[in-house]
Image 1 (spheres, rainbow, N blue to C red):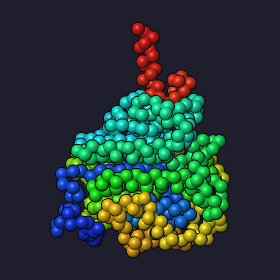
Image 2: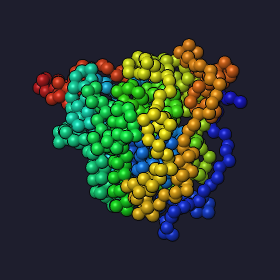
Image 3: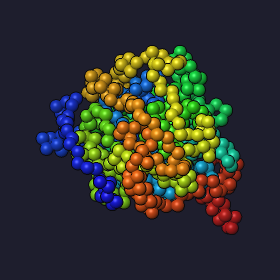
Image 4: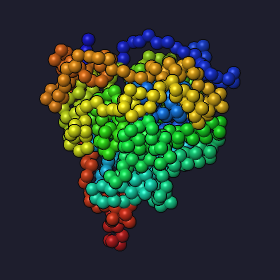
Length: 580
C-alpha cells in the first residue's frame, strides 16, 4: 500500500468530469471539443490579481458558512469561481509568502522557523527566482502593494529587486494601521515605502485605504500592451499594536453592534469588513476598465487566524483545531478562492498548497512549465478547469527542528509530532494553542444575530464585486451559489475521541473522516505512522538551516532616522565613507 519513493506521492487515478464553458458571449473563446482552453483574448495573457489577507481564519469569511461577518465581495468571487476547500500553507507569514513566490516548501528556503524581524540580516534566498520574475519574462507588468516580510537588511532582498516593477507598502510583519510604526526588540521605527524611498506622506492614513487607492490607480493606468500582475498584500486583519490592537474604522465596527457581543471580536469584524470593501472596489475598477474578461482573481489568507486574544487578535478557525503558528489544521488549512472566465464555479475539494501558485499561474499565463525545476509545487490549472486529475495527494506542513515540530499529509492521513503549541512565544489561550477556538459564528451562538447564509445572497449579488461580474457579462448563478454555500461549509461529524499528546508520541489522523483532529489513530495504524515518519526524515535531508530571526542590534531604527531600513547596506556604505 505504501511505497517509500517520490513516485509514491503521485495521486492515484481519479474519475473526473470535464465541464464545458458557461456564461460566455459568442465572441469569447473557451474550451474546444478537444477540451483545449486558451486565453479569452487572443494573443494576450490574462491579468492576474492576487489579494492576500493577513492572519485571517477559515471562519472569518462568510463563504465558509458563518454569517457572523458578512463578506459579500469576497463571497462573490468565491461563489462565482472556485472555492479551494483544501488549500494549505505554512502557519506563519514569512514562510507562507516565501513558498507562494518560489513554489518551494519553507524548509528548502531556510524559512521554516518563525518570521523575519527587524533585526534579521537574511531573507528569501537571493538565488531563488520568484513568481514576478517568471511573469516578467512573459511580458507582465508586476506590482506589489502592502506587506513584504521576506527580507530588508539589504536592498537586494526587497521587492523591486525581486521582480516587482513597484512596491507601495511596508517591509516587516505588522504595524500601526495609521502611524505605520512598528516596535520590536531593537526599538520603534516607521515602515512605509514607495519603492526604495521612505513614504512619509502615508503617515496618518489608514493602511487598507492606502492599498485600495494604489490598486485602483495601477489598474486604471495599466498599459494596454502588457498584462498586469498585481499582488495586494493587506495587513488586515492582523493585529496592530499593544495599545490599540484592532484598529478598525468606527463606521465598520458599528455595523456589528447588535450582532457581535464580544468587543474584541466586533472590532476584528470591522477589520474584515473594511477588507471586504477594498476587494469590492478593486473588482469595480477591474470591471470599469473592461479587464475581467481576461483576468484571474485570487483571494487567500497567508496563514490561519489568531483567536481569543492570541497575538492580541480575535480570528476564528472554527471548526478546525489550533491557531496561527501551529501545524494543526486551524493554522494551515486556509480560506482561498480563485475566479476566471475559464473556471466553472464549484467547490474544489482536492489538495492544493501555496507552493502550487507559481507553476499554476505560469501555466495560466501560457508560460513553459517545463523550465520550472526542483519545485515542490504542481500546476493546478488544468485540474481547476476540470481537464485533468488533481496532481497532488500529499504535502509537507513543515519541519521545524528549533520548535521540534513536524507534520506531513499523505492522502487521507496526517501525521503530527513534537511541539504542537506555539505557547513558547506567549499569548496562546490558557498557555496552549492546541484547542478548538470559536466563535462558530452560527446563529445558535450567544450574541449573534439570527442571520442565515441564504440571507446573504442578495448582499452578494448586489455587492461591488457581484455588480462587477454582472456588468462584465459573468453574472452569479444563484442556484449554483446556494449549492456552493452549502458545500463549502465543513462540519465535523461526531467521532470517538482519542487524545493526542504529540510531544510524547506522534499522532495520526484520518482527515477525510476527522478534519477536526479529535481521534488519534496512531496506536491503531503503526505501519502508517512509521511510513510517514520516514517521509518526514527524507524531507528533512533537503532542509536548509533556518535563518536567524534576532541577530543584529544595529538594525535599531534610532540608528537610521527612526525608520526600518536596509541596515546592512547602510552599515557597509558608512564604513566606506569613513575610510575615504
